[in-house]
Amino acid sequence: MHELSLCEGLLELLEEQSRRHAFHRVTRIKLAVGQFACVDPDALRFAFDVIRRDTLADGATVDIHQPPGLVWCEDCAREREVPTRIAPCPACGGLRLTPRGGDDLTLVELEVA
Ligand SMILES: [Zn+2]
Image 1: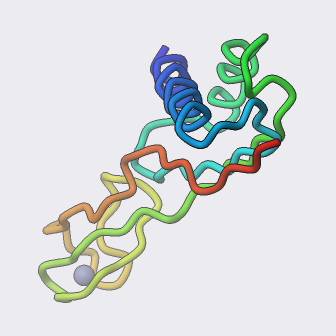
Image 2: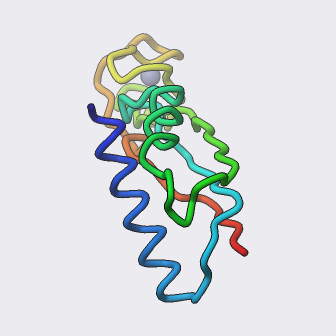
């Protein structure tokens, strides 16, 4: 499962941060999942619940939000928000679109104890 490997990566990141900044518990995690990342937030939450047992992130509140996907439209010569990667430009219907991010999982905020 895609979400599971993302969560493993996230946990490694948290452990690395805890060593660097000398904290032992994570109380809140805020994540941004790009609209194009092909990640289901519910599946991500579920996978993280499984993987974090008996780790520093056990019991932490997890906030996941999904910023809109951004593309550059060649025809409008403007940046547009699109709901999916295969959607046409919402303004002109054009298909000459270049993704501008939105395909990754980002750790936005971390509260620790
Ligand atoms: Zn356009």
